[in-house]
Amino acid sequence: MAILAPHSDRAVQEYRHRSGARDTYWINELVKYVRSQGLYDSFRLYPFMPRTNADSGSTAYGLGGLTSNDMTLVNGPTWTSSGLQFVSSSSQFGSISDFLGSETLTVFARVSHASATPTAVNTIASQYDAANDERSWLFNYQGNVANDPYRLARSADGTSAEVYEDDGADAGTTDRCLVAQWVDGGGRSLWVNKTGKTLTLSGGSEKTSRFNSPEPVVFSALISGGTPANYADHTAHALAFLTGTVTTAQRETITDMINEL
Image 1: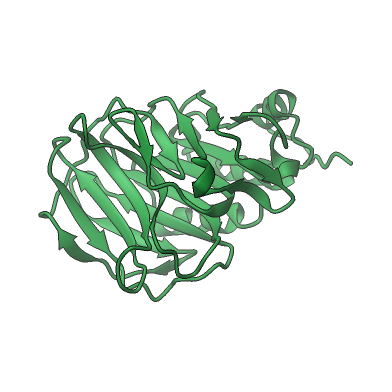
Image 2: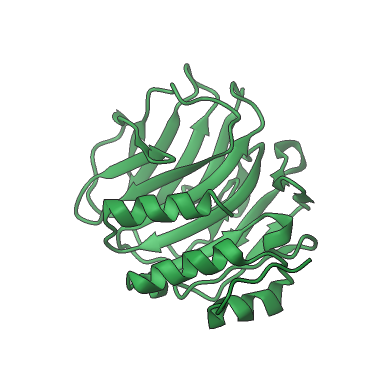
């Protein structure tokens, strides 16, 4: 049964038509909120639950004014009742043509890791082509080092990068929204849902800007010189991007709403 929100936003109605989504109540609430905050043109959401997207095929549809680019699914991630499942052994990932500049970037990734103790690097999201010196940003789950920390990387010039890690205390398979942020002219932050994590410099030197890479934005892998690597094993529920300044209240409200999708 289709679930519509009263007075659905016009962009949500158009999204339903393109994607075939059947349940857009919380999508509509989220879009109404970002519009009310003046953030719609800086926001893009990719829902991955079967009732909130196509539930089949090689396109994950998105909505929001930041870009009109949808996500191409490569090597057949599986649409399941729990979300879009990516398996590293099948080299599965999602790719979106570049739509980002060098502004402040906040990435919301609601995922369930397949393992609390992975044995390899699991890339959550990235725009980071090392082979072509077009590194911009990278968000990983580091299964190849002690404690399995989350890792955030950023380059100011496309070559050298800062690398920050948390303490790894949040390892687990629980469905949660991971929020990574790189501030133009400032630092970087990581939240698990709304809990802030302490980040420590583990490589390179601190950067305060982000390179404007022309490379695609990639979910569940990174691509370097045209070669995918560091695939993730996880089930994804939603992915969102927000550029520019965001307040704590705005970030936390968007996190809560993404966790309702």
